[in-house]
Amino acid sequence: MQADDRENMLYSNGKRCSIQDEEVFMMNLLGEVKNQNTKLLDIGCGTGEISIALKEKGYETFGIDFSNIAIDIASKAGLNCIHADLDKGLPLEDQSFDIAWAGDVMEHVFDPIGVFNEINRVLKSNGEFYATIPYDLNLKTRIKTLIGRSYQEGVYKKYKQFKHHSFFSENLMRFMYKSSGLKIKSISYVLINPLNRKKIITSLKLFRIFSHLMIVKAEKIKTI
Image (cartoon, rainbow, N blue to C red):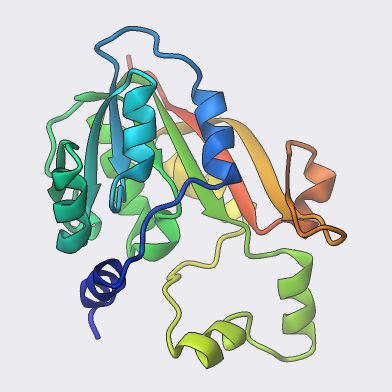
C-alpha cells in the first residue's frame, strides 16, 4: 500500500488532526499575531483542525498535505490549502511565509533535509519555524535495543507497518537544521508522567532521556 493510499483510507474512515498538548504548547510559543498579514504555512495540515485554531488566533494560514482526502476535508472547512508531496518540494514561492509549522511531519518524509531546505526557501528573512520531532533515543528505546528488540517491533505487530522513516537523535536533528540554514532557538521535551500518564513538557535537558518528542522553535538564518 502506498503511503498516500494509507492516509487517504484513514481520513476516509474518520481520522482527524486533533490538537494535543504539544500543539497547545507550540501555539503558546508562537504567541499573538504580530500583524494581521502574518502568513503561516501549516506543513502536513491534514484535515485542518490546527490551521483553523491558528486562523482563529489571527494568522493568515495556508496548508499543504500529501493526502488529497485530507485536503478536500480541509478545503470544505474553508481553509486555503493544496495537495502536494513534500518530498518533491514545496510548490510555493521563495520567501512567501513569515512562519512555518510542522507537527508530526518530519519523521514521515523520506528526505527530511530536503524538506528543511524547502522550508528555509519559503520563509522570509528571520522567519520562524515551529516543529515537533521525535526523540528516538529515549530510555525505553535504549532498553529495547539492549535486549535485542527493534523499537519498531510493537508497532509492526499491531499495525503491520511503521510510518517513521528517520531515527532521530537530538544531534541528528541539530545537524539537519544547521545544514538547512535554520537556527534553533529553543528545544522542549515531551514525556509521560508514569503515575497519571499525563504529558509533561520541559526545557530541562536532564529529562530528555525519558522523552519521546522534541518541540523545536527555530528561525531562518539571516543571509547577508
